[in-house]
Length: 443
Ligand SMILES: Cc1ncc(COP(=O)(O)O)c(C=O)c1O
Image 1 (cartoon, protein in one colour):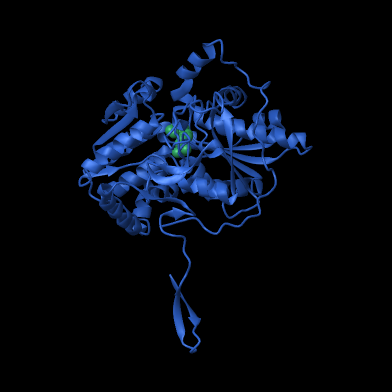
Image 2 (cartoon, rainbow, N blue to C red; image 1 turned 60 degrees about the vertical axis):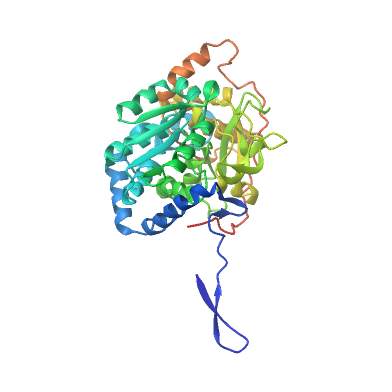
């Protein structure tokens, strides 16, 4: 974009407004991919530029959101939990959407984009299976064949979602041997895409990967933050003090946070998987203990060995089991605009049960991490004598997919049912962040 200024000669001279570099969030993001993929990414960027500003596309997508997916999703005041915690807790109910999670916001958007790009085939990776189910659903609806890559360990943990995807007409490849998880699935999907770029659309499931994916996914998920802000201010007349979301690749969190980025008094808190312990291989807390590096096409925070190999990861929830994170979160962390905390498996399991018992809502294990982070935050405030904070939690999905795994875990003698006795290492700044963002990226 150009604006005018007077030159020394008195004539108006165009100057280039300083936009963030395309495809970057500060130093994060970009396109660290093989040359083979550049034409496909260029084609996608061009289509995105065209359709993200197209009124007809917007109208079609809104129709799918409202009349198929079940938007707007509810904002529920969690009265019992609020009493129990001495807080005012609101839940954004992405768990009530068709297919059971926020993933449908992104898959409907990208499948529509694939249709506009006249692609005859969609491929996707999936971790918990929620993105795979949501992609298979969008493919069935828009009549585009879908092939899913899923880690073999995730297939074991999420057998029901495997069957759901097949019912929806998708074909599935299990990848990665005995420990196959989301990372293996993303790698395999990228390999497939490189071979079949002409007729294939790669429908990535989180705000990760090379430009323009983080921007595309954030934009489709920004409906969460937009609706939440409107609903919250309408119901309470105020903004929340703090907003919580779990972070795997970071799509529900960035969608939610995007609605409050400019409200610098609203604290944005992402809950990563702290797993068993914060030692290598036992967690997937990329922002809490990771370092900047390149993973799957983007510069971001990743879990790596001192010589740069990607570490193995672990989480009780398949959807958080990823050694990296979307680059915009890396940027928000470095800017100090968002904080990220690590929630242990057992803390998430305790939150899973607490929300089920107090509110009659069984959350996804991923979302239970956000609930646990919110509880720790409220407790930290209480210790400072501050009570009754007004908070908002993104309930990214429902727990139906997790109940069997949770039943199995709770039966194990070494997994404590409650985490109340456990000291937590997380600290919250709990002071309003005053930094004003220089601006993210990137269209
Ligand atoms: C219910 C639910 N929430 C959260 C996530 C994490 O993904 P993201 O960080 O992209 O929102 C997943 C991933 O599968 C999920 O199924």
